[in-house]
Length: 390
Ligand SMILES: Cc1cc2nc3c(=O)[nH]c(=O)nc-3n(C[C@H](O)[C@H](O)[C@H](O)COP(=O)(O)OP(=O)(O)OC[C@H]3O[C@@H](n4cnc5c(N)ncnc54)[C@H](O)[C@@H]3O)c2cc1C
Image (cartoon, rainbow, N blue to C red; front, side, top):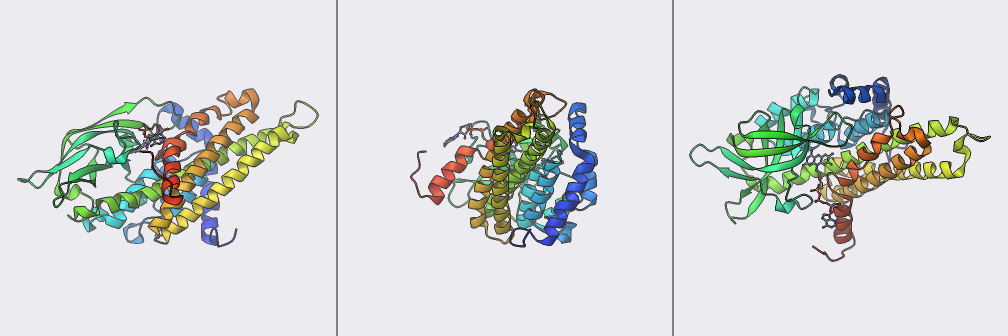
């Protein structure tokens, strides 16, 4: 691997994370899901090795590296069959937003715990009546003039890991003091805040992290729950700071899953023999696997580009690349999983081989955090300059 793509340190990180992932593996993950528990043991070990906070500032106990390193951690654990979904939201989105825009107090309060894995933060933007159109979100924050507190009201859906996160970073809107228009603002809402309740959504996804509907019913928060100094103008900037890491990490999540599935399929195709050669000798089996492998490699290259641009401080360049990387990785993942399941014939649908559940799981990256169509819209409008239909 040349330094153009990854440095020697990054390649070494890949190797050591892969070794950790291998020690746990898919059987561990499947057992955790079957028991209805969480990947705490892996989470804690990864934290001790400095992997979870690798992107967070050293001053707060992090590794002082970037999203590229964190995406390597997620991809390699996923390739080993045990992805840690909360890496996408806690250190990548919430950690980045707080590290870049939080007050000194907020950094001191949240970042060391995120870096050492002792606390997690969920991220809530999606709403039932807004979905892909984030401009329509109605979760509203108003200031209580008497106490200076914020009062938050609204609903969110599909928010991951709220039950295991000490707090959720909630995207709301406040009225701009000058223009009177509503603009986005981020609030840190502790899990036990009065008026903050959650209902688990029954998802058909085999994963330890669950999704929740959240109800914010006049949730009162202290003035310092607003992320950033009391300069509400930074709201949009703060929000966007978290979105690029989110897309890059979702790409890494998809790449890990694709590699895990392909690894199993290739191993099977080498051994399974029903005619005179193993099935992997038939081009109808070999070529789609080779094609899937190429698509994964290309998507990883785009993911590395996006991460490098982001870590170099080019938020605009990273925006386009991160969207393209998320799209490419999600599509590569869906196709890789599909082909892997098919390669195993009937065994592709048995629990023993563990691939069938990935058919559902592989769709997640196509839908979230921004759907395939919204990325195609973005590229049509922003990159190609085509007119908008909506
Ligand atoms: C497993 C999982 C975990 C999630 N975790 C989180 C989380 O932690 N935090 C969070 O905030 N959200 C989370 N989400 C929510 C996710 O980000 C949303 O589901 C996603 O943004 C799509 O929104 P929606 O489901 O409302 O779909 P909709 O917006 O209703 O879209 C439905 C379909 O219509 C298409 N569509 C919509 N508008 C257009 C258009 N203009 N042009 C073309 N097609 C269009 C979409 O592409 C999609 O195919 C999660 C979702 C899942 C499935």
